[in-house]
Length: 128
Image 1 (spheres, helix red, strand yellow):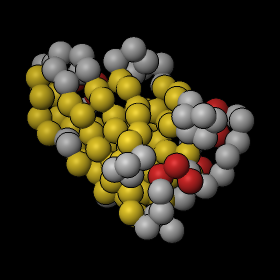
Image 2 (tube, rainbow, N blue to C red):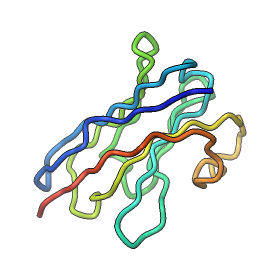
Image 3 (cartoon, helix red, strand yellow):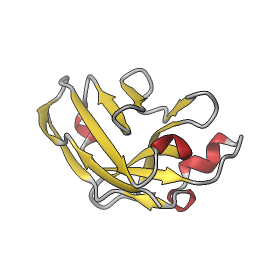
Image 4 (tube, one colour):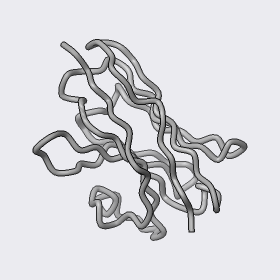
């Protein structure tokens, strides 16, 4: 079982940057497909990005492609989400999650139910 803890959220102006961290404990994050998902007030949780399992492959939601980058540091057992050129619509609680299943279908990881372990979330607020 893996435990996940997010950090790095905060308040930033539109056009600014933040880096979120997800520190794993109990097991190495490389044992899982790691995802970042977010939930804005009044909206359903949505997929943002995922890392792994195919040689560190990455996949992004269209809404963040070119602005966000997911990466991992095995030595620190930490997954990051670098967020640049932030927009007001990026305001949400961001969750780190781990999926045990390894599937070739990228759309599988769009769904919250595909993830087995979750962090507590970190708030990101972008002011316009």
